[in-house]
Amino acid sequence: MCKTRVLSTKGDTVVSSCMGCKMYYLWHNNLLLNFTSEAFESFREVVNSLPFHKNSLPFPDDEERIILHTPNDDICFAFCYDEFETFKQAIDEAIYMNEVYVLMSK
Image 1 (cartoon, rainbow, N blue to C red):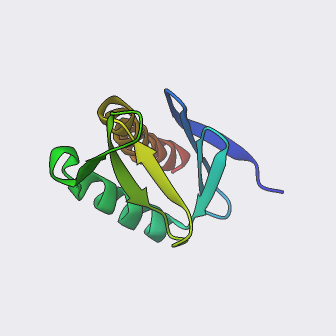
Image 2: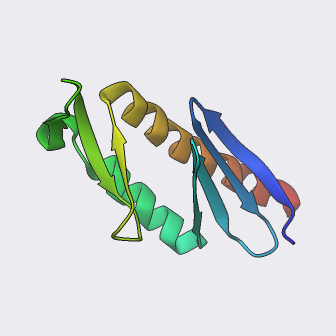
């Protein structure tokens, strides 16, 4: 079993990682995604490259949301603007904190 370390907690999103196997774990509400380091970096690039206002759609509750596909085509996130910004911040902070921990372990 991996010993994980929490890298970021923002809103409903928690990102942790295992220094041993180099996996990232992204929890959002009741959804958990696992990523290799490379896949997490790629996911971050995709998330940060999406402009909310060009990609959002009106949902049945009359709120604009962006749909974010996950590595599994059958699973998608739907974020309002504030949730999406918080999600991106959590991912960015996790990458930064992991870099700090890597430097501290040297």
